[in-house]
Amino acid sequence: MRHHPALLNQKKRDGGELSDDEIDDLVKGVVDGSLGDGQLGAFLMAVCCRGMNPRETARLTLAMRDSGVVLDLRALPGRKVDKHSTGGVGDKVSLCLAPLVAACGVSVPMISGRGLGHTGGTIDKLAAIPGYRTALEPDEMVAVLRDCGFVMAGASASVAPADRRMYSMRDVSGTVESVPLITASILSKKLAEGIDGLVMDVKCGRAAFMKDHAAARALAAGLVRVGVAAGIDVTALVTDMDRPLGRAIGNHVEVLAAVQVLKGQGPDDLRELTLALGVEMLRLAGERDVGAAHARLLRAIDDGSAVTALRHNVERQGGDPRFVDDAKALGRAPVHLGVASPRDGFLADLDPLALGLCAMDLGAGRRQPQDRIDPHVGILLLAQRGERVTRGQPLAMVMAQSGSAAEAMLPRVLAATRIGDEAPPPRPLVIERIATAGA
Image 1 (cartoon, one colour):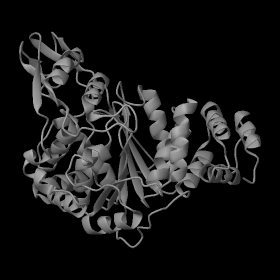
Image 2 (cartoon, rainbow, N blue to C red):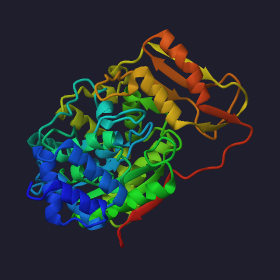
Image 3 (cartoon, helix red, strand yellow):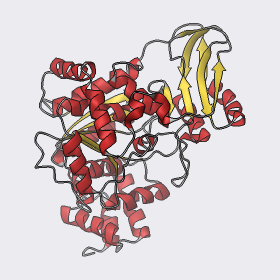
Image 4 (cartoon, rainbow, N blue to C red):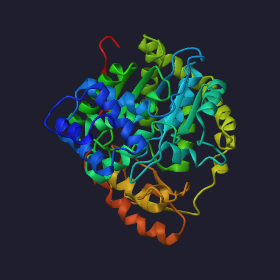
């Protein structure tokens, strides 16, 4: 490193502003190892305590992006737009959103991650499709995008390698919640896709990383501001994660739920959020009329082009597309047990965090990065918040590999529900939209 890391850490610790050159040097040290773990941890803590201004955060983001391969999509026509979610329970939107927006003529290069803890990951859901390949090198990603209009892949070691080390060090250094570091981590990988626009779904609630609206809004606003400073258009929706999204929690059942949306079916909330994010993606691609954008999405569902786009991509990435028309092609867990309502009333609450942890303990998620995922286990919600229920009515279905595992989970799932005497007040799914002026 050309700059002494201790001096840079002291400068940030004391509230100083780092220059572009100093930030570039720090990121180079992260990648080549010349910045030791102790020095990196000290830097992350200084940023966590003192923050970064928009220029510093944008420079950190770009330096992390440029630490690895950046896709060159200039040869492909039109604007390239992606979507990213900060994660939640039952959030399978990417699975239906990417083919839907691609069917409307927008290129969608989507690099996604695996889940950890109660939060599911898109790559884990795609792994439930037999043969589907998400380990793609950059040139293959570009080829699939050219052929299919969208590509879904995991981040390879060549994409933003600085983030890989910084991400793991944030966990052990107690700096996970730093908004500038979160922003740089998300945007560096997204910018490496070579996109022109990004729609952020920033979750807010019990099962979200940001528990309250103020924190979610601060992150969303920071992502928009820094994304624009880094050269792309960004729009963010703050959305509700104080309830599960849709009815399916688990990998293969979430894949099937996404197919239903593309066929014009599926739960109302999942369909609503997919369309809301799709509208924002089309707007960033150049469609300024919100009504026209919404109509284009509905037309792609109604004429079958969205589900056709999904089939084409699954085949192109090595998967077996039979599940699109035959749910049995994905297999199923051998044991299905229902959770019955203890009394008459209204389903007043479904705790998304508790349900996400139940699914994880069944094997649908992982506590540690090396844990194996079971694609078939999970929970299917048979009633949703606000619905009237009767005593003995099934509220949910637990899908497990053994009777003992399912039996053990029944009381936990029941404890995650609350039956009231009155219907709970309605709550908006999309809480707030944050965009640059005029967007």
